Image: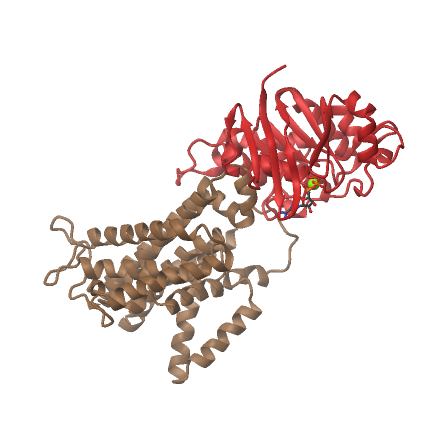
Length: 270
Length: 320
Ligand SMILES: Nc1ncnc2c1ncn2[C@@H]1O[C@H](COP(=O)(O)OP(=O)(O)O)[C@@H](O)[C@H]1O
Ligand SMILES: [Mg+2]
């Protein structure tokens, strides 16, 4: 098996008295889609925030290619190749969808301080932005202000912006939440396409999607890793069924997305 | 945007024609307004494009002005080009140093620390020997524009001074337009719109804010220098908070984030001041009322007027 690209060691995050992540250790490898499951409040978004540097850790370590990056800021981690999307859409509302992605791609430009060059005239940035829009299915609305896009399209833009930065590691926080069926279908295909040459951490409540793309699944409950392993193992695990579903309706994913969604997850709402 | 171009061209012609009217008073008044317009545009980079609302922008103005006063020899004119460069550099470096601290705080805290830094400069020039105290410094000679014996113009001549300031205004505008077109300019707009996401996309946001703060400060110093050169006098009030407040008001009156809005705001601000001063000694009352009315009934500033006067159109894409 390949070396992990991004790894956590006993990662812990406390908010006052609440322990949102408790000694979480996991490995993300290139070519592997690692799905993270768990009921609302389990600490999934917190883990992504720790990995991206949006939140400081309480204790534990984060390693990127064996380098300790626990204290690096979010922009430094992004530059290393760790890209993330947000559960709650986090875009540039007044700018066009294209400019949202162009700006994201611009962050990879080697010489950002040439103040007399034209930002719109850099071919590599243009291409990266257009490719990201195309991949996310937004080519047709590229010139519309992001704030005027439909909720589903804004969710697609959320992902397109991450792709425009060409990251190696993708941390995706509920990418399908809020998408319509067609959009979600397209996104699952995109995730499948991205799988082979990225290391992906995928937080998602849509069980059909998870079982369609995941190579490894980790289940979190109350900030702790309950179980981690290949999809078949998770599907068969009595502990997961017990703790995660809170009943014995059957294995997650066995009867399609809707039935297997965790109680109180609110389905696809963002 | 043909109509916009036309408006700009007409305004420029009008500006260029002011000295032809032959009134020394109005020539000097409009010179003063153009200096304030440069000052307002420099603040627009910070407030209108980066989203950093500073209440201490007068610090750069004061430093630019004092650089001329302190660098000028007592019995000779100073070189315009040398002292101008020194003023821009001094204001830029001071802003870089102050910016190092202030870009770390946000919102109302940014407002407060920029104000506090400006008050510190006020104190420094008011209460220490550095700026020769509250009386200020007279500059006996206007800066000399000669280069190797050739004198292209004479700042002692108010018409020459007028056109010099007009050219500096246009150059400042062109410089800022280029800057805003560049990757840096786009990144600054991104920071104003969503700083958090910029960070997460890999932009070193603090460094960009510091760049904006430094450039705005250097241009503010340019305006302060011109003012000292025009009036031949500096005093610590140049650093005062009302000076910072006034330029912010001009910007708000004219419209944030459009450059030309700051210019229009400077004109309207001074025009109203002149008008009410001519009408009554209690001019600050109607002046304040007029400002309140303008802000309430024209929230986007004068720059939003053309769009308001035109019939409403469906919102077009936002091109930056
Ligand atoms: N910034 C924060 N401050 C305080 N508590 C937080 C914060 N972020 C998350 N939490 C709490 O941590 C727990 C885990 O939240 P989260 O990571 O968002 O869960 P999930 O993404 O799995 O639904 C929740 O109880 C939540 O209320
Ligand atoms: Mg979450």
